[in-house]
Length: 252
Image 1 (cartoon, helix red, strand yellow):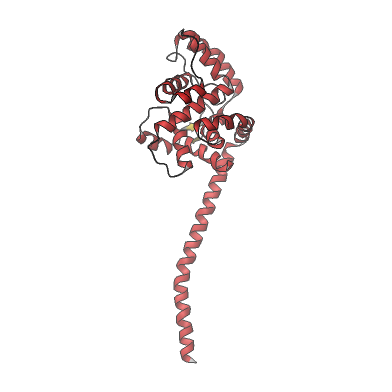
Image 2 (cartoon, rainbow, N blue to C red):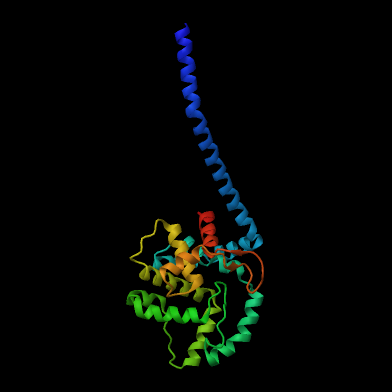
C-alpha cells in the first residue's frame, strides 16, 4: 500500500513537472494569437469608413478585374489588394479639381512640371509612361497586343493629352494595373516568394515606391510606415504593404 502511494506521488510530481511548462506555452501561444487578432481588427478599425467605401468601389469593378486577371495571371483579389490603399485615399472631388488644374501643365510641358496622382488607383503620368515603355521593351508581343497601350498619334502633346484622359478612366487604369502586374511577373520571375501574401506585399511596395528599385530597397520599404490615408495631411502613417496584405487576407 505504501509502495503504491509512493508511485502515485512520484507520477504526480512528474506530471506536474511537464504540465506547468506545457501550460505556460499554451497560454503564451493563446495570448499571442489573441494579440494578433486584436491588432488585426484594430488595424481594420483604423481605416474606418474609408475601407468600406474602397471595398464597395472595388466590388463594383470586380467583373473588369476578372476579365484582366487572365492576362496578368493573378486572381482579382490579388489585383485589388495591390491598389486597395490608394483606393482608400482616393477623393473624387479633390481628384477632379487637381486633374483639371494640372493637366494643362502636364500636356504642354511634361511630367517635370506636373506629375500628379490621378484616378481611382491614384496613378501618376510618370507611372503610365514607365509602364508603356516597359511593356514595349520586356513583354511578349502576345501580351502587348492584348493591352493595346500604343498610341495612333506621334505628336508628343497629343499623346500626353490622351494619357491624362486614360488615367481619368477606371477601365484604362485597370489596363495600366494589369500591365504593371505583367511587368512585375517578368521582372521578378527568378525570385522565389514564400507564398502569395509575400508576393503581394512585394508587388504592392513596387507599385507604391516606383519601378527600378533594388531588392534591398523594397525589403526595407515593406517594413516602413510611410503611407498616409489622406494625401498631404498629417496623421498616423501605415505600411502600404501591410494595408494591402490586410485587405488580401480579410477578403479571402
